Length: 301
Image (cartoon, rainbow, N blue to C red; front, side, top):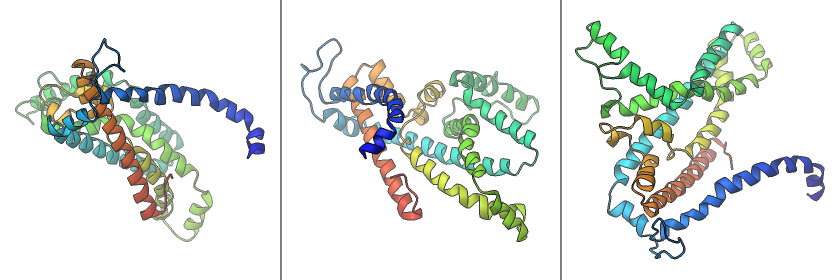
């Protein structure tokens, strides 16, 4: 073991900056969890604050009852986004692999990857310009064509909220999510396809019996990794698209923590909700990993 470390000492040395940065920005802040267990008030010493134990944790489930709609919104949107993002990326990679014109395939991949680099504020501005009830270009066009009497309030009506936010995420991350699947396809030995073609398999059969089975392990690994983020939402995305008319379908745990922590300055309560979110995320990823290992034999740990 020591000899192996000695041989690879330069590689370990290169890891030191990443380990230090991770420790400083990911583990040192965990000491702030102490705030959730005391009656902390800004301007006073943290360690001189009154100890209240799990009072803030109990308040989330007994006093406010906010967990009902928060968990509903967070789980519904994020699970839907996870399925939609991985599903569309999986299918897109399969179809892109069947494009025989190399230049055209690269062009499609570049075009679909471009939205990943667009900030959420720009995406919101574009969405507002296209889907605003009265001034949106698409609503105006549909009304002028006589297809609708009045424009749809896509950005404000709660019944459109979940579908719209999931669709926007699919559009933004399609190219990015498909890169891993495209790389997995590239690693499949060409001999498999050549042997199948000699045996008389057509393109559909080669895709169904060679490409898809070789992509399933990658899909399972991505599913396990992303399952740990089911309770985490993109703050910028939800901060921009949540408004006074759709908040009951759009307010998620991250927005709730921001509201109580930075707007209402109730740091102990916001910290307690954040701790519960972290613990539940760990339980989810461990559970999904165990289920995947039992069902398919594929797992991360």
